Image (cartoon, rainbow, N blue to C red; front, side, top):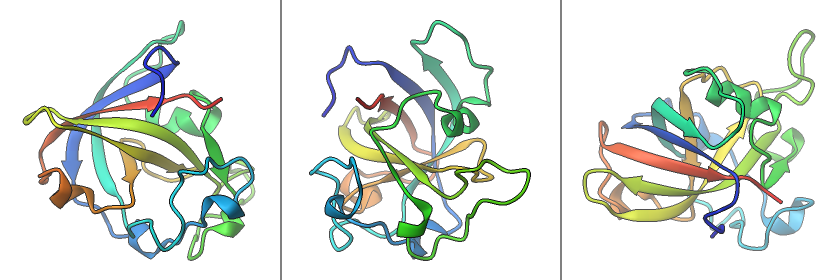
Length: 169
């Protein structure tokens, strides 16, 4: 996982039930994505779906402050350099596509390594924060892994968590 002194963005929030949209998406493995690290799980290893975190607060070690509530949307505009990006056309069942008046890379998925801490139990684990550019979610971040995170780390809806997303190279 990342070196602690790297540029990062910290989100605090609660685990929330999702709409099930990520469970239908299929992400390609590292060998199919330019610039993806070798430890990005392949399509058969990635657990379908995501863990949703409803962001209630954030702290950034950036020189410029970002208004509360806008940090999630700013991930579309390189607020924090991703580890890599998955092109929209490589994500199966991806309905987000570029459209007039919208972000030109709409539907691409920026991916960051992240560390997640269950603030009730103190248990920490590594995951991937995935943000599809142009998603309507302004206060939800999606966390993915090769395992089902809820049962693995005793996470229920309402569980407070802290997510530290790390800048890519």
